[in-house]
Length: 375
Length: 138
Image (tube, rainbow over all chains, first blue to last red; front, side, top):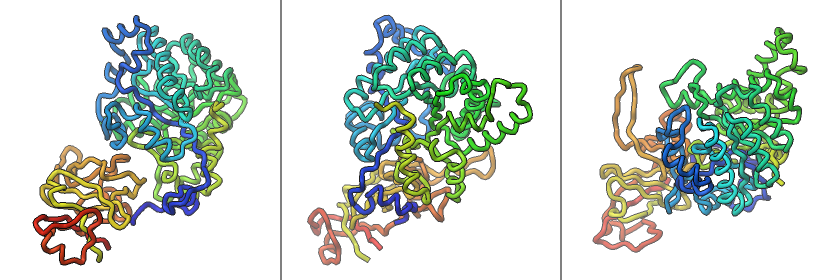
């Protein structure tokens, strides 16, 4: 067979090639996408007033009414083998999620991150608040309560700061929620002070803030306008993450909230070391412009930012990827699968040979245990 | 060269596909306009099952602004990361030397010939009247 080479230690862990039962390897997955079977699932959690609003006026975001207007390489950007036989969307059928994902891969915890109709950046501020609450209740009732391996996210209405804080306060003491959740493409760069009360609330409750790529903040997918191709959009997530990290660090968010944990989701990570080097160089020359920063930008990044691994860069020489991971820090990398989306990563096949068993364990589970609230 | 009878010919009509297990290997069979192709089912990139992938044509371009569309239905795209493989060769479009699928000789044989052997039919009896799909493993 012509399978991609696997490190011997990964083969043993997977136990798949040998058929042996491996010693149980814990896996925490930082990016799992639940979906409603249809919009009715979400509507069931909306008050009548907002249910009718959705029926009559619909969802209005800066990228238009239909947030997913094209198949994105595969229908609904999902694995073609993830559609439930009984109908509904990938990520909506708990039995299939268990069989194809949780049980098949031995997932200890999957951290949910809802996308699509979530209220995150609805233009109608009150509807935004109502919809995020509905989505958070829906995650709990449909996924996290019946399946304790799935942990819900507190989706916040990021452009309505008081409502975002209120939503964190409403949900934070419920252990089904493992993170606060926003998207990277907000109206303003995420270090802007309008978002600081959200970080204060997350820090207060020891909730990491998951920042997933995408969003309808109204900005183009590139820093210089709208690109022609989906390929460019995919590459653009990395630049949106760079803007986000730069803004959080330079605005002083981590100086103001010293216990804040930020998890960047699905933006790749090959760019992170170079960004840190560049920011340090600029800081050393222009420190007086940002006197509120007491450390080098790279130090704030090293202390406060985690990155999920999927979709990781795949250089020809795997050593280059291992070098990048080393530069970021072995304790800052969190495994993510992106199930059920098409660019899914398998925990036993995604990582380069030469990683080593201890680091593989650390990325699959050890780091996640330290970041997420999994009680 | 072990030969394996994997299906009745009528079970894989044009436009269809079938995943079979032969000597412990998962092999996907495509019938494209009456022509049969057999490839290893597991994507060499990250392990997706190609039997769940989408068949498409080959889009090429001699320069920006021009394109050629050819060979409709002869490129299988992995259901996970959408790597493209040529069903005729098993080779991937982007990395044909390293990323390739094992391809197997496949043919349709009359039952009358098969009962003479040496063939392995794993799941059903052969009748002389029918035609059968035969895969040769290396």
